[in-house]
Image 1 (tube, rainbow, N blue to C red):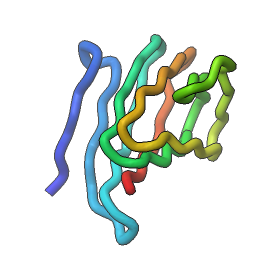
Image 2 (cartoon, rainbow, N blue to C red):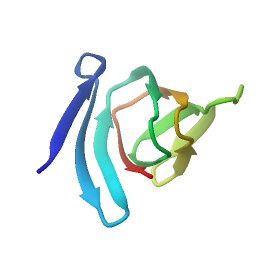
Image 3 (cartoon, rainbow, N blue to C red):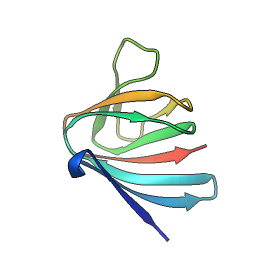
Image 4 (cartoon, rainbow, N blue to C red):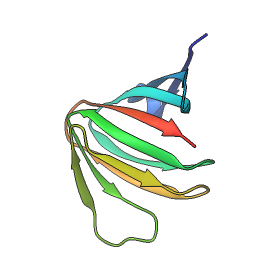
Length: 93
């Protein structure tokens, strides 16, 4: 069955499910700044909206629009700036 998660006082919500490629989440983020840590490799695809991302080890923020994907290595932290309600799918490897 689906598992739901809520972070940052309800400003980030996700629903976990299983795909043929592995576990995944489908989520939404309200405007704000967030930091997440990974326990696996994560492939995050923006479904709606846009995200400004500071990937591990980088000093420059990158901008991702709808249908763009970025990858974060295992056991790393990354930061996000969200300017409008945005949706994503994250695949865990």
